[in-house]
Amino acid sequence: MRCFASSKKNLSSKQILEDYSYRWIIEIGIKDLNQNYYLANCPGKNLHHVNVHFFIITVCRHLYRMMQRDLGELIKREDGSIKTLQTMREVLFRQGSAKLNLNDDTFEVNFL
Image (tube, rainbow, N blue to C red; front, side, top):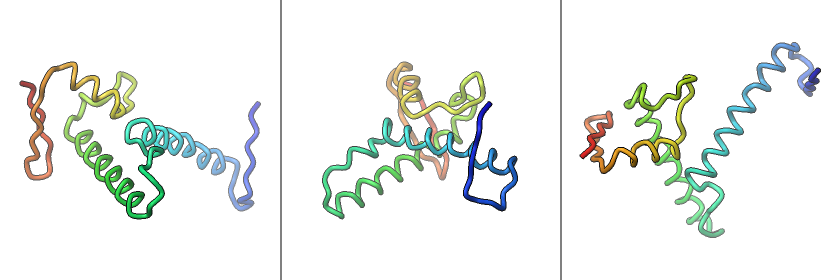
């Protein structure tokens, strides 16, 4: 048996469990940001450096989302979940050299 508690007294048991399910998504997202985008490796405490670090992570994450959209089935695992950036690096580099093109708002990958 598992017990879940909430300080939100107006939620039903089902709503509490549904809200709790989002925790896993958030934890996996933070793990991905730390492992693949080096979120925890900020280059200093200077506010400008921190802002640039977070900006670059945001841009890289957004570009990867665009690639996810454009690569379609190539980016999905057998269970339907989406591959992480680390997994996709391995898949793409195993194919050999590739050229990435941005056509309008779509990424195109051509293996050489």
